[in-house]
View 1 (cartoon, rainbow, N blue to C red):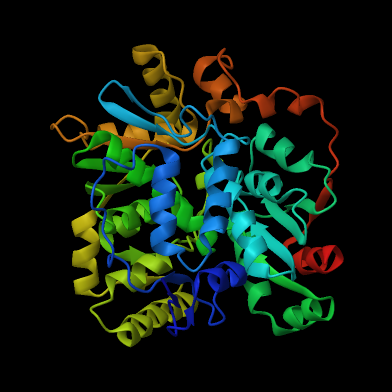
View 2: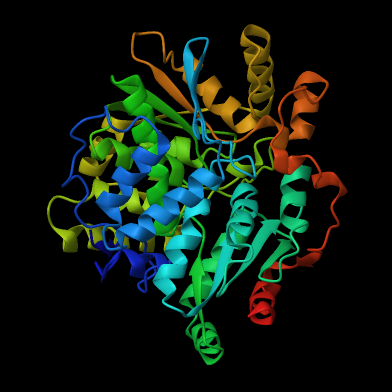
Length: 465
């Protein structure tokens, strides 16, 4: 399958889209013929390997079969072999456990596979991966790329906006090809800087002079986004009936993967965006107006503390596509220009109609998040992290799971990644099975000690290059 960019319709194959990360026109790559191939039977897609194989065969058929199989094998080797992604029912809701990888978050799925795709796409060229993170992508990307020949990765994270465990996961890796730098700012600042660097011709020339190409491990990269589709296909195969899905959403990539799964024929009825008080996505889904505003709050669900959500651009293109690629690109470019000029944009009426037909949303405050963590534990004995709690609260608030239609909550991280919030919710960090990689984390040496101002991010990239 070919990929096209959202702004000028530039065409790339799968390896090119992975290697470039951000499209040359400043937009994002998306599948050119989404929906052209549908799931024929869910019966053969009931384990993670089968689901990934189907998804990669559809979207990444430009990668040789042996490369796709290597990526799947690397994923399964880093997750429990018996069931990489369990689907468990607690009360009225199903929880899709996406956190059994080495860093305890859903990002481990795609970032176990991306280094395989990147290494093939690079064809022997050296790659410097630039990554902005609100907490989880950074550690998963560092773990995924650590020691991978021909690659370096530098991660920028909010110095004061991540949990203690998230920080340790990014500051203790000692491999020579990985680096983490805390910034005096938030995720939006880091993401904007990374996007600007990708578009900076002088930075590209500097990289070229050192025989290095810049790429990304954020969900702007198709190699991050495409593998995530599989676990929603897997959920559909296991339920084998129509269901709703609720996803804690920050950069919009995870719920966009669910939307792509629906286009493939996964029987998803409604896609629900769950937001914390940084609720730009929830408001967008309700109104068709994207307006972050000036208010930014550091919350107890830090991976969702995002106001500038990159992956929405891919949905904008799809909502405006009526068979004419040029028209969809023109409308997407107009919206992005409106945002650059006015700090907001509004969908046209037809795009709004399409958005409202498939999406819904809800918001959980910090207090409601803590209350939901307590409720789920008291009623079912199940311990959920604050991001999953936001979704669980929103699902209950909307009355999902009670009308005969199953509701799947994306359980995006292990609670043990957020001990401070667990202590506030429960008065303790609950006993339970922590990921193996957490066991000695607090005793490892902190080797990644870099802190910089936003204006110094370029210098950090140059130095690591």
